[in-house]
Length: 226
Image 1: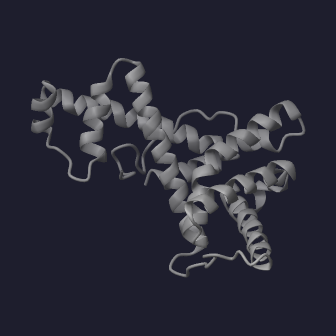
Image 2 (image 1 turned 90 degrees about the vertical axis):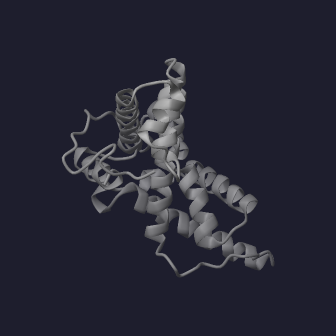
């Protein structure tokens, strides 16, 4: 869906911040570090998988195996401890680690004569691919959580209206939605506003979990909701 003024914009106010999974993942406290690492793996599994498929032209199964292997190595070797927020964003750090891991994996595969389709395309930069897939993953996960949240609250029609209008390639008109759901056009407006507000909160919660401070959070939030 469009991350436009429907759910955010240049004048949007952001909620109070919460502890970052990054801070926990690099903590000296083992009790904090492991949950933080697991949260980062959960947040980045899909964009890493998609990046491997697109950037490195790997099959579905190979991309899954490589994604699993990358995160296993990251946890075993404590890659995350090498992150320094003063040198850039965590996503850039993670992508550099991933490219290094994949380059080594490709060399090993070539030595074993299993190079397959390990060809890196030139159409997009690594940064563009990873940022796009990260954004896609954030919104997809937030939409699924929105669906579950509204269903749990006994408001499945709110999500259904939102899905038919904001997520559909050919959105239904307010009048058509009102007729189909037996509600007024004003109710359609209210349903959409409610779903967009909730989605915005869910998106921002995900961004907060993988940023290291208020300044980075606000920059990232404005970028993803532009």
